[in-house]
Image 1 (spheres, rainbow, N blue to C red):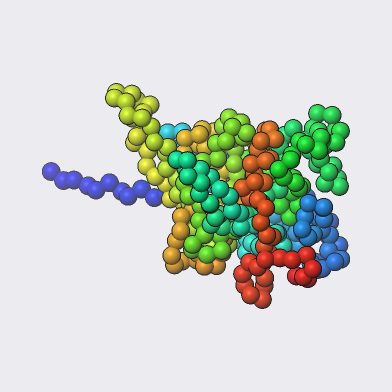
Image 2: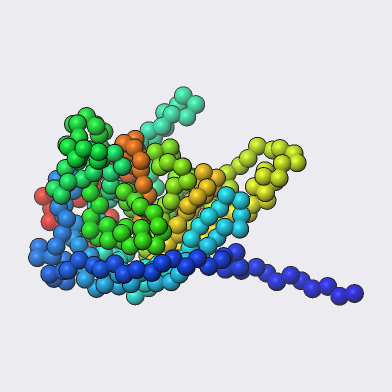
Length: 335
């Protein structure tokens, strides 16, 4: 009697192809490739400094996105992911990474929480920034805020804890393209910069009530390759329950996200799965990684939450090409 060892399954064995409709998004015209004063830019009173438009060569390449068709990962309970390897062409992924890191303003947010009656200060272990506004409001062309239902200016007290700001063109262009291929709409853009191996984000899920049920979240990776870990949320033990048994049989996932890759988490994924970017030694971690996520907040509580935990009240940071690191930015210092 002979036996054979089963073939070891590869990551791609868990995927089934999903073919989104292709469409061409035409980029806006550009007057100059220079990123100086003659280059088109976004400037609002809520921005600490202007943010340039994307260079034309990046916009042109993005108009052909996605670079590959997605693969679908849905073989485990409550899991539904589209995985683009990559979405942003390798030809411009590094240029886009360098541009976003150099041109955006970031924050190193600190906040306090209470655990067991004890107040603890949290130092966010990465650089963050955020743009956007929930569905109850909209931006006028000058960056002022109007009620979505009436197009009249909002009450001064509607957003007392934050100053919402429009998504700049360099991110909004990617948002519009993403909406086509994910068949979802987004009104928020969160950007994280992981400067080195120590920068991370712990296990969490984006399942806040202000996102509505079964939210779709598109997450882009640029720069260094980092592991993206996922695991199902724990469930209470119940005997002879087929649903619980299927959940208990789920296995953790590790996706090595490379520059230009995008994952779309949708359906019941956020309600039932946790994800993280752990600390990592070695590899490319020291080169820095940018994560761009698009999502849709339904009510003003989402706006207040995102600005509190991604802007806060601390200093503005900006990339310094000469020092090759983020440095505190001051309005009277030319960068």
